[in-house]
Image 1: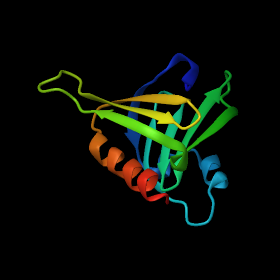
Image 2: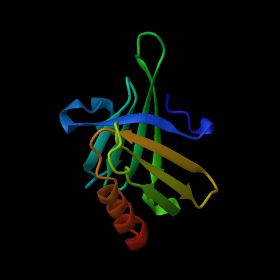
Image 3: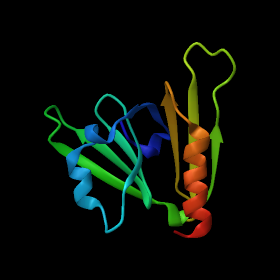
Image 4: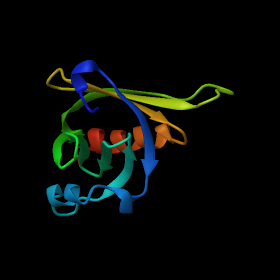
Length: 129
């Protein structure tokens, strides 16, 4: 499902840190921590204080996983879209453009504080953390 070639990651719903795939913690560097975590049916997107990590669960058994990392330090610009008034299913969107020309787009379903996510990205991208 996490295939940035088709331009969007759909239906991300918030999850608690305890529900994050435990393999992701093996990628962390010193001082890295989770700021927010979201999932589709099997895939996950993790926002840390250093980067965005996507986990694409593959195959019938789900044992094969693709981990991709999107560092905040490489963000050129981004946009957020808040939900509209009285939408039946509120959703938010985040689109990120990297200095390499690569872009990633995320669509969040359910409760999502997209402005808080935008603030986190701003803090880390603008301050060079």
